Image (cartoon, rainbow, N blue to C red; front, side):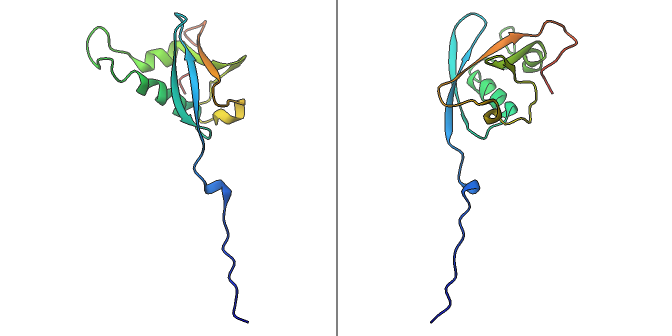
Length: 113
């Protein structure tokens, strides 16, 4: 018999499934972002920033993202998403879930890490 070489397949190398999250803004409106299920909190923040890429980068209507992340925190349920390197899956997020902005009560507290 000839030699049989078994090929191995690793499921952890499969691309992560995309999920849609709804982001609830302070004014009560929301918008959707798409991220992978293995995305980090930082990846989620970048997806949110990308959703506003149509806003001018200069002038009175520009968005200062360091200011946003320094004064507001993303939350999922009762959990604050404060560690940028944390995988959103560790919070239990799944397709169709909602995250919201929370005002940071003290200027010395920060969610921008």
